[in-house]
Image 1 (tube, one colour):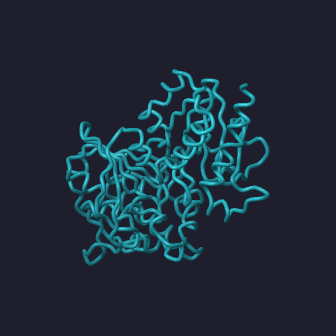
Image 2 (cartoon, rainbow, N blue to C red):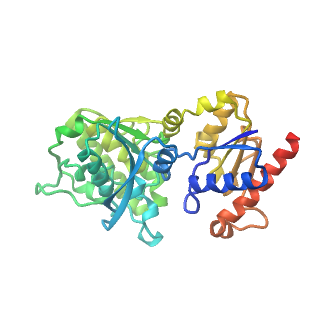
Image 3 (tube, rainbow, N blue to C red):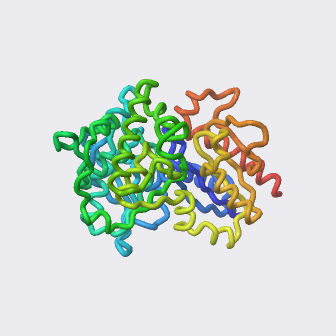
Length: 375
């Protein structure tokens, strides 16, 4: 029997790599005859670099950067020397994981640190930048990152605008855009299709989880609208309604509008890079996937469902193990079985504190039933 482990991260408690390591150890301990193939995944957000490096596609490099509030940190990116390709995860520098909850404030948080990581890759000669978007603490339209790369975003006094979502309200002129940036092939890896503005936009859908109050959201929406207006004045390109422009607090919009970046599904990008279809062609008997929560958003194309649908094309059944389950009826019929860490006996707090231990229990429960049925 061959089992493919292909989870996303359990954000805030367990990485996809840790999930695979725990599952692989458990299977080898109890069922050594089973062949295990581990492919930790990510849709562009937290864990994107881990997935690339774990697979052997690129090497991990660590550089100095800044967190969303401008404090010195170190951030990783993945580097392919032969193709001059850098895989950069914006959450490494500008993600919520870098902040305490009391520090969440998208009026102040900036993507500047992500720009510093990109700048280092360009210094090394990068010709292709694959920027994973997701898990952001920001709502600045990517303005901070663009400034770090030398793009002039100036106020009425011809001074650089201040960092954070609120800084965009000061924008009076988009000045110099270095020619070296427009010569790069920019790919934005994300599975978010939200536009920049409106009821389905970056601010309306995602800013509350980054700490925005209702009052803040009014300012943040105005700020992104103001940024989009200036981009359109300069480039004759309306990026406010483009699918995916709202990803990562509108970072996609800034890079689309000023650097001609193109979006790709994070899952599809990794699926091709990891050659998942070849694995299914070789023969996989079961897929085990999972993430922090399976809910009604999952059916709109979140990673576990994408891998389950891919497996179904090859008549391979999938099991999902997640932190919590909250969905209606048969919405996730693509899975043969779904197991939740949180249940009548395990609270959400317990599951967050003892994720690895409870995951082992659920994995054993799932696999034991699977093996018994196979026998």
